[in-house]
Length: 488
Ligand code: ADP
Ligand code: MG
Image (cartoon, rainbow, N blue to C red):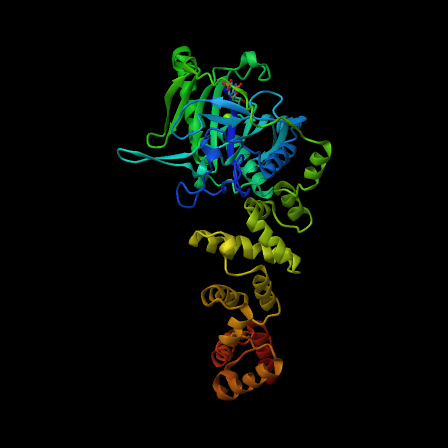
């Protein structure tokens, strides 16, 4: 444990993936297609262009702002942040800088970290546009402008986090919020989430709410995975703590921007705050300031669905699932939606959860696919569970049916029929087989001792052999025992 208290603030950028078009132009919001095909003159800032604000993106931004308990000011407008970079064809980024920020300021979020509820204050949430993406090759760089103008939400927190665990738990919480609001997949693997991580350490005896007591803040720019955020924070806390202990804090920990380097697993100096760029912000003159009506805000508020946190509570309190199972279910919205469909069809929530969290998740993980691309529909899973519950097949056979359904692209019922897997539960049918077994094994019947029914296993084995494993094992056993006992 460190002798110092870490203070961490995040600037989380999340691309909005669920609008059809970009935030200021009618180009498609899809940069996974062929490079440089989703571009309009507006994205390149050709002379005379007039950007048009995407209402859907604004709505999503306002929705997020409400979930973060921010306040929503009365007017919407954008500002130019001026700088030059090859991935910024306009020479400026449209963003929202001056407070009060139009989509949201001063909120508060509750999230869970290691089973404990925590609160984090939000400084602001704003809507901006993404830059193009550069691909640095051996001796050249290629640029894909499909990403230029993709809507981006930036969430700036107060430095209320104290550890890498808390930071990652909060990011996971936000990822779920974006997914549940149908705003973004918030998938780091697709580059949809990038974070700037601010870290300082202070004396834990002092009041952490007084900014005068805070240490020097170091910013780590553009960390693009949650694992990277965790490692970068842990590295920075260690580096700053060591500097305190060596008496070199004032020279080693300066106000600067660093970057996280995966190769050396360390943070590396990029630029100091003294060479900070002056962005010369001004209000974008081509987008009129417009009023956000109270009615519209209320309409948007009504669209907010039940979020992961509340679904989890529902699974625990109404369905009696464990906290562990509930956490796994809600982690990906698509999995939780699938589970809810199976339950809505009338399946017992506990068996549905066992199948989703067990067989299905391991199948998806192993094959690296999402539940959206999974062949077995909620209806088919319900059919499979019903076949087991009605003892038509054993639970062991259920697993075989599961794989057969996926392999052969058939329904569970069809697999059971085609493979002749139906268990024999019909008592008359089992009785006939028992009679045959007894007739064919006079010596064993003679040796059978009801006080020490070891030979019973042998007889049950014979039934299974004759039925190719299709007799229901527990009825076969009890009927066989009854018959043998009656002969003694
Ligand atoms: P800047 O002016 O350098 O951009 P801000 O005050 O706007 O700094 O804060 C940017 C981010 O840095 C926010 O997420 C904030 O919570 C965080 N931050 C501010 N001060 C500290 C600090 N002493 N330690 C850690 N994070 C901090
Ligand atoms: Mg920004």
